[in-house]
Image 1 (tube, rainbow, N blue to C red):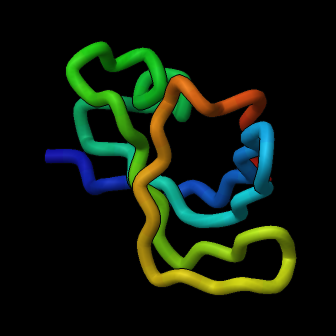
Image 2: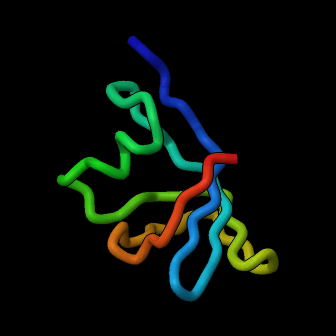
Length: 72
């Protein structure tokens, strides 16, 4: 069985920029696979830096608020 993959990404919303780790489950291969999953309205990030100054251990972002995502 495949292991989970952790990818560092930058997520831009209209009001904030989030940099954190996205977990890609074993049955998925890419960030876009997680984004295109219709069953989940949110993406979960861990070890998050918000706007280059605030830190959070975990954050759930509504996918409808995302303007862009960059894999780092």
